Image 1 (cartoon, rainbow, N blue to C red):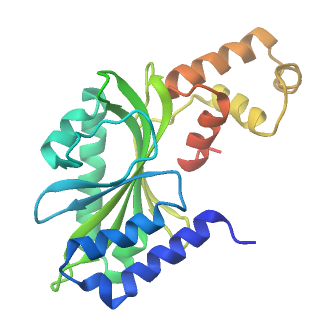
Image 2 (image 1 turned 30 degrees about the vertical axis):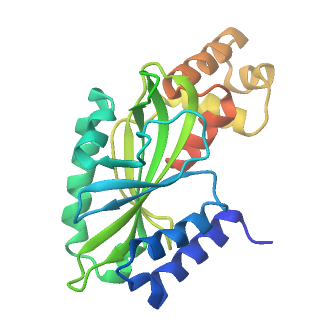
Length: 245
């Protein structure tokens, strides 16, 4: 049985190849994405490079950051990102842009830019989120026209001491082309998270790493504070997505 992500990317590849996708009718283009929204638990927006704005396609979560109109200018979206994260994201986007100039059309569509950062929601606090940019459509000259932004909140409340990390991935090989930002977790904390991912309890982790149970639980608490996650499963998911474990 295929994984849900494999099905999703096959569907996405079909969207990129279909003649109807080339249509100038935005309603027709976005209807494809609304169908795909059933497959993945991501909020989806489409960034139109020509209009320099985002349009909401799907948002299955209770907490939201976008206005009721469902559209948001790129400048307004940038302001929602935590000030401490903006520099890292700007560096990553610039590096990605320079690399994209050397890519073929097929290569552009087979790379994704992923990052973890804090975004301000309508309730006024910064929420920890995972974001993924995927090229959807190129213009006649081969330049990027439409980009899909997938967003997945990893916390219901504000995160503390969030670490922004960004990476460019090749979807075909899962190779990391580059990574910007500090590692989410120091070496010892990451070792604890790996052991948790292996389904070990605090006592077993303490014995294997030769540390106290108090230290293990302290790492657990700090990990949740860093990521803004309500439970350790969310932190493991972030670490996996960003190539940490």
